[in-house]
Image (cartoon, rainbow, N blue to C red; front, side, top):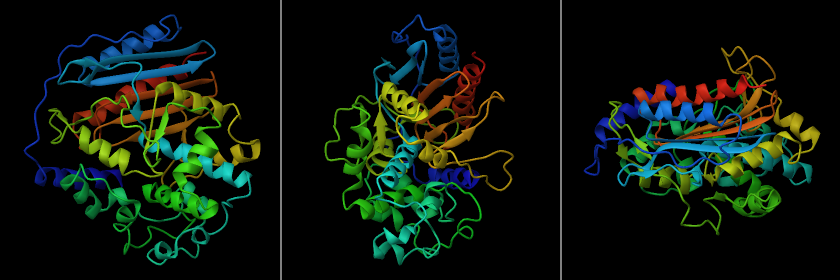
Length: 395
């Protein structure tokens, strides 16, 4: 599926060039002072950041939280054009990591008796949506959460990709995005397989509204963000979403040739203002680590709900589990499996994972994306993997 996305994106990139494209050389930056330079992981993680900045990533940040406290380090540039360094106090779009928050929210609503995961999603969805999608007589809310519904991923559909590339700075409603899915058959019989689909979590926002009778953004705030005191976590669907969030610029390697252009306006419009449930959250590194640690420590869900969230499904061809309810399964060091989520847009990439073996939470952010192909696919994944592998080795 990702191969198809890359292929279609490359075709669209070549046909959707605009006069706004500009090549940007990456100058040598200085590092913004780290938070808690005495942390035992500080020096090694800063070396990894600096190494990958030297290899061409424009800007990067790593944050860890464990028994030794919080450490945040950064390198490179937040804004290449003005030579502004990446700062440790910046906020970031967290892309698909939003799914973890919405998965936890759905389980909290079930704990309150407001939502039942094994009921049909159609019981909560507007009739106009149910009538446009096949298989709604068999798809449960749980199938949306663990990507076993079979509903196609709108991000993989050519008409949606064309719309984004041709009108990147335009914001889109949930209904407008769903129209790209209408008329497409299911990928498989509901419940029979696993395949990641952003559409599932977009639909979940409507489910939450049907179950509670409230706007889903308000439910997220009242039932999750406020009780956990996540004061630096912002959802773009909320009425109180602030305009002045300290986001970096976001950069795109449009032709996969290593030449970057500023894609910030389109990135924020598509992955921020137009994302609902499948994305849409922005947060400080501290807040991401706080949420992930509280989740791992049993402060967000009951033990029964946590067992549901970490009940993994496995996709065709996978040799280990893939997904829970808003959580990705990962096993790097061979010990207790890690869990968390990756996230990314056309011009940004983030990752958050928790390591039960050493009780460490990590957040990684870069202001360059993967989805146009080229060298940055390897650069971003390589940086992420080396950070996670280092943390997995710590006792």
